[in-house]
Length: 463
Ligand code: F0G
Image (cartoon, rainbow, N blue to C red; front, side, top):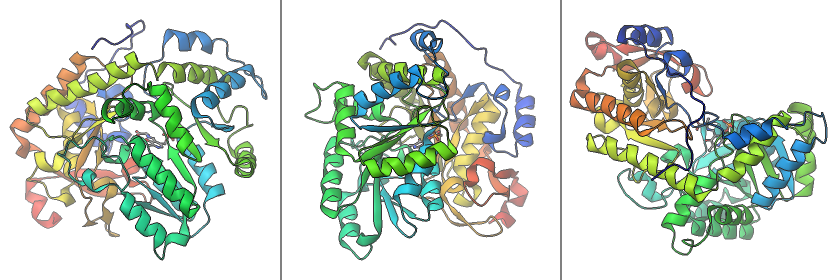
């Protein structure tokens, strides 16, 4: 599958010796978030703001209008977003979580519940910070990592209906569907699921919003997997998804094909007025929201490029090829492969490590030590419950490692390298040590936690 572009500007990548990597990881408190980018050979930590821009994006960036209010670039951006989403009210923000904070503090009341297929980590934190309770109701199929069900990103409709009809029903202040489901395998949400959520929310008078960071990738997977949408363009599918919801919050660092940006899309004029006041006080005037004119230009152009079927086809195919290379080496990952990331089943690859030794984190560290590859744990370190001494009291359901794929950045040769490093670990998994937490912040632990490897002699007392 040929990508519909060629490479024009390149950036050198660092190659460190094994000794240098050992030293770098120890200095980072065995947390890859603390590494410096120049210590990393292949960076799969995030697909957020890490993609390559196009010549067209850079050309229009030069036209960026930096007027404080009412800039030309704002009008270009807002026309593009309104055309894509159909929402009359658009508020720009510098990134997705700023939109979450503004939306949730104006939409949710303390004590209310926000229900989602799966809240992303900052989304979860922002619901909490608004005084509300985030509750995840992923569909049952999502629990079987090996199942190739096409829409494992769906919300569990029966469970949602039970909550809405039950004693907590009155407390539900928002239903937020994340497309694609980043917290659970980059799995897509079907249009049928979104329609059913819309119906339930209407019946119960609960607002229904999309967290649409990867709206184009979800649309592509719908066009491939959902009968009835085969002849729809990704843009038409995305537009229909936005139409089903009352509004959205979007990080444009993903499918905006840019390094910064986001927006809130709304139909409700009163909510818009409240959010706008908050935006002006905390992000910037409502025609730039913390973004420069050149950012708004790059985003407006990026939103056109991201729904190009040739781009989406090549991107989906690249991720599938990496998935196949990894499977061929005997390493399992969440099936079926999504687009923006692959999720390695570290629990299965490293059965000698118990949950309290953080097998996902251990695999992530080993990928760095052996190959300079950086990725993120999605397991008990991220989701488990710890006591005051940082001991794990309840593990996460799965021990996963996310390999996020930046857009238009790496080639098959880079992917072959990643698969080869993984193959080497899979040949002798027992050499991978577990880890123990040394210090940890109270909120969003995985970003700043510091750890140390557990040597065999200390394994006994670690339990
Ligand atoms: N929602 C989803 C589904 C996300 O994946 C992210 C970010 C956000 C909201 C927040 O957006 O970063 O612009 O503030 N995800 C990145 C990731 C960080 O690596 O998955 P942001």
